[in-house]
Length: 187
Length: 187
DNA sequence: GTCTATAGTTTGATAGAC
DNA sequence: GTCTATCAAACTATAGAC
Image 1 (tube, rainbow over the protein chains, first blue to last red):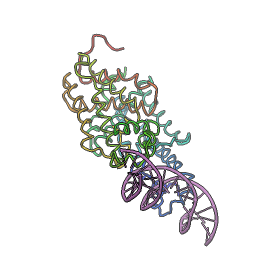
Image 2: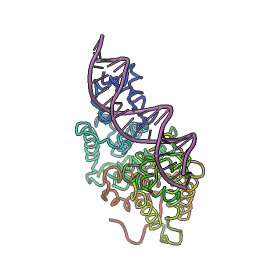
Image 3: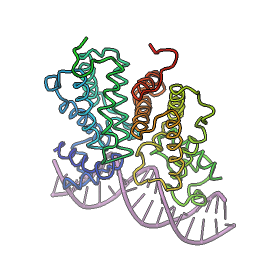
């Protein structure tokens, strides 16, 4: 039942924006009255909290495993970037909840924040596996991909103006951190 | 009087977030009652619209002129990036209004949008002046800088975790588009 | 668990006196 | 131009019947 409510909440968020979600709209979508939601969630922010945790948990679940990723460092990097780009661009409301401070007075609980950290650690691990150890390098990579996602959502929603730049951005980054070019062996 | 109201609105936005601005809070700050604001603005969204235009107009006004920028292409690029980074990071609420879809049901009017276009055209001109002509190159540059700004505001507000990466990011980009190196090599 | 009823608040906006 | 008074609506949340 909690899951049905959350599904409804995502649908509402997709239509009116993450900040436009109201208990009435969510309840109506599951065939309830608004107060009935309080049987399942103690507050509206608790719903946001569950959504936040769910979003990052889904990211973790959908993230390609090391075995699924290409062997070559650049291809590996590119696959991770492409996956996160597609995942993020697929749902603006979700992206805003996950990565922007869209809801005033909402701070994710430690429990909901856990999968977010898990996702970050998985990224750090992948990058360490191809020789990118410096935390600053990981930060730059994440900011680069995040910037493309942001631009895509804000300036060309539904298009591919920035999606087309992703592969090139990854190569630019790979050159900078000194990853071997495709076809070359690792140093 | 309109300007005083807008100043107050920026103050409120700085404290409660751009989405948390209420007419009551704005009015109180200028020593008015909420309905009195309707003498100066026809609606709340009209205030947002004026703020949007004001924010971009200030960006245009604060943007360094071509004469103020360094001669060398890389330094020129770096100066522009640093300027926009500092300008954006200085005010989260302003950045959210300018660059994110933070207010549902708000779309900037054509008039308010004009200085935004002006700012973009100025960037295009600067980049054309150093030989970066391809629109895709400009998009990548803007997304790169924007990603660092976003990350700074979202993940390390008040810090410099991503500000420290800016110069390096510019060099990475400059290498990619083939700008000549400065006399001094980066580490 | 879900409902009705309702409290209590906040909000954007309007009308009309001064 | 500013005020008071007020509207109409929306919202979160609680209480208590069934």
